[in-house]
Amino acid sequence: MSEPKKLFIKTYGCQMNVYDSERMAEALGGSGYVETQTPDEADMILLNTCHIREKAAEKVYSELGRFKGLKADKPDLKIGVAGCVAQAEGEEIMRRSGLVDMVVGPQSYHRLPAMEARARGGDKVLDTDFPEDDKFAALKTRPKARRGPTAFLTVQEGCDKFCAFCVVPYTRGVEVSRPVAQVLDEARDLVARGVREITLLGQNVNAYHGTGPDGADWSLARLIWALDGIEGLERIRFTTSHPNDMSDDLIAAHGECAKLMPYLHLPVQSGSDRILKRMNRSHTAESYLRLIERIRAARPDILISGDFIVGFPEETERDFEDTMALIREVGYGQAFSFKYSTRPGTPAAERAQVDPDVASERLSRLQALITEQQRSIQDAMVGRELGVLFEKPGRMPGQMVGKSDYLHAVHVADCPAEAGELRRVRITESGPNSLAGVLV
Ligand code: SAH
Ligand code: SF4
Ligand code: F3S
Image 1 (tube, protein in one colour):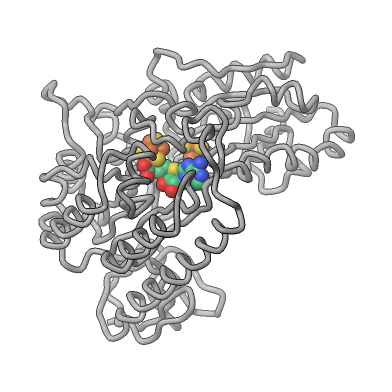
Image 2 (cartoon, helix red, strand yellow; image 1 turned 135 degrees about the vertical axis):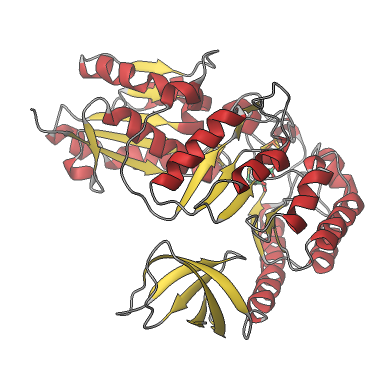
């Protein structure tokens, strides 16, 4: 037997990229690779990239620059670029960086082993097709290794919404849902390997409409109820949802399905109807607020999380104030907020841009408000008894760290619970980024 080759993968961007990196590592496992955490000893380096904002995309080129020395020392080292930058700028990457041997778009990962073989032979290979074959079925590998208590599972990919600022419909392609049986198989396999919590992933996960065993299209809620029946699976989450696809059965499931956690990431982007319209979001501030009301009627304690873009083209102070008012009305437990970043090829790129200093100033006001809300919701957990799924030992001896039902990090000192155990914890303290408590 020859020495296994070493694979170093660096992952940027969203959770779907994290999931994809795991699949790529498994696929290349079949070509004799084992993963390493140090690029210096790698025989192959893969950058799994993100194109969502300009800064994210530029990171690829600076990272590649850093590998120049490595490649000079080790001519056999192969360097690949995967993910959304690969999809969007594959040819440019090949042109700009002589270091790159392989470029592979998100829909071609199942072809990676064949590409690797060609790259080993000295070819430069680029695959940014949207092939018709079932990527997920072809990627299906069954390594039986144990794994941590939480896992991502992609059930839906791509997007047909075309928000005016966003590259995702171009980099991930049209919306596709995986068949129910395939998802359930993968979930059972994960549970058999020690997973207790699964987060279902999709760029528009609540638009899921995979074919069920009965031949009908199943909704996300129906899929969640099927997962609920898997013994040993304790928690179900899903992300990211679009307000327009929050169906009645999914809202009801939040009140009725005990394994479905009380946390919902529901990006609104802006609180101004004028801007929402220009963003092509097809919902209004009012329709979003009414939706939140209905979700809270089904599950009063649900923690709402969101995404915001400030400084979208033509955003006025008045528009921004509408966003702040919406935030005050919702009360977010968590949120991601970004300064608008111009993405070439998207409709908003052509419009009148907001002064970057004005946008920065708005962003810091918005973030101050969110931090305040986040903190007060987190502080209100003190004194409550929550479910905590323990994930790993903490930094202090005897300490364990896990996540609450609401996704807050929770530390327990002198903790007899092991990773993978779901226990009740009484919260005693709220720190800057986490809670502390004691086992009940
Ligand atoms: N599918 C999800 C989000 C996908 S991208 C949804 O529909 O909400 C994740 C987040 O990145 C978005 O919610 C948005 O807030 C942000 N984003 C996307 N494009 C952006 C851009 N051009 N500039 C700044 N932020 C952007
Ligand atoms: Fe991008 Fe989400 Fe809009 Fe789709 S729905 S275009 S992924 S922001
Ligand atoms: Fe980035 Fe692509 Fe995800 S652009 S956010 S890695 S879908």
